[in-house]
Length: 127
Image (tube, rainbow, N blue to C red; front, side, top):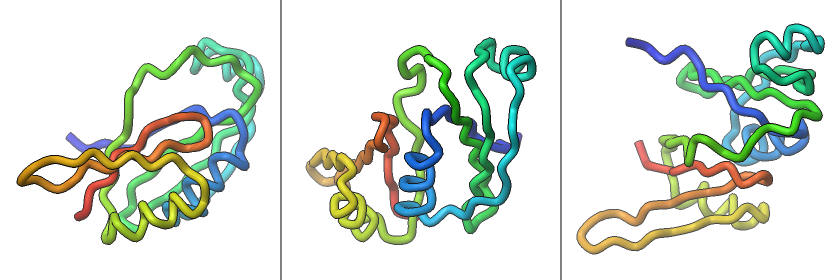
């Protein structure tokens, strides 16, 4: 099995760009508009207006959808990401004003979670 992409709803593109490009360094590859009828067919929600494709250096793809939809509360607790230097990323996230939660563990590395502007959680591992 291969995972082709992940899809998230982030209400405003500026929030998505700030987190995925500004913090994580993903590259915005493409944007596409969605009309109301298509949005309702795909998401059972009329308010999604735009899709943005972000690509990581390893080729992983993230689809972020924006609009004025009132999406129900989070169903997924967090997404786990690997980065080359998680301490540097945690420091950068803190400087950018993102919520960084470090969970200390004995005999194991700390667990680091970063929340984006809307409260979506990202576990950060080194790899």
